[in-house]
Length: 148
Image (cartoon, rainbow, N blue to C red):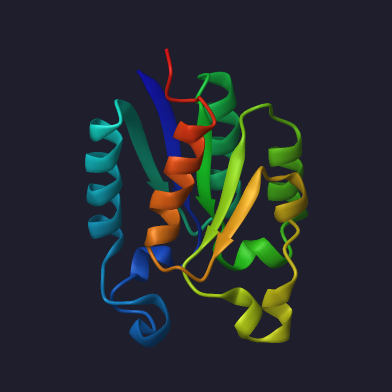
């Protein structure tokens, strides 16, 4: 069974409480449970991890590569806009990454309009709420990653 890493960055542990008008009322646990169910339906194992710490996220990116994960669905949170260390970690692996954002970052503050992660990612999904994570999984499946 192929494995996908569902990786969430800073403040995403506060989903459901943090700015629900922007991020909705579903929690990170709700998201992870939904993705695990979808993964089972698609015969893919979803491994979830969230951290507020840049180094821990980089470690997970490296681990996903070393463990032959089929892909990474990654919401880097605010690290999107300035973490060259995360950007370099992604650039240094073969495991494909799809960047996901719950809100439409291009409708928000100007500093959110630039992603240092996007140029080294397979793709980016923004502004579709938690559905963006599901669409990223579907993109990996349609790209043949779900096939043994």
